[in-house]
Amino acid sequence: MSIMADCIITTQIQKELTTAYSQGYVSYRIIPRWIYRFSNEQESLKHTPRNGRSITVITQQNIDAVKVLVNDDPHINIDSIATTSDMVYHMCSCDECLKRLVKNLPKKRSS
Image (cartoon, rainbow, N blue to C red; front, side, top):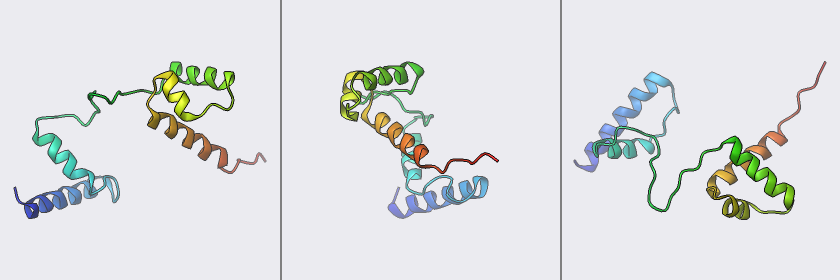
């Protein structure tokens, strides 16, 4: 397929998704990836295990493991937590960012 045909298909899919779900629901840049994945007979958008890239899920067990590490060493960094607990660095850093965001939210005043 030509680049122009790919752009037309991507644009058409983007318009249909925008009509169905609203503007900004799916980025234009992700659609070619989906087209590629589905054209290679992959029918799911779920992450699959790949060589060298493990999938880590946030579970209560993972949270408890991180709490123990932080309680033992309050100055531990994210790299050490990820290495020690066998968690993916991205997961640790995303969770840390969310905590900072929540901490900075304005507190609701009670009346």
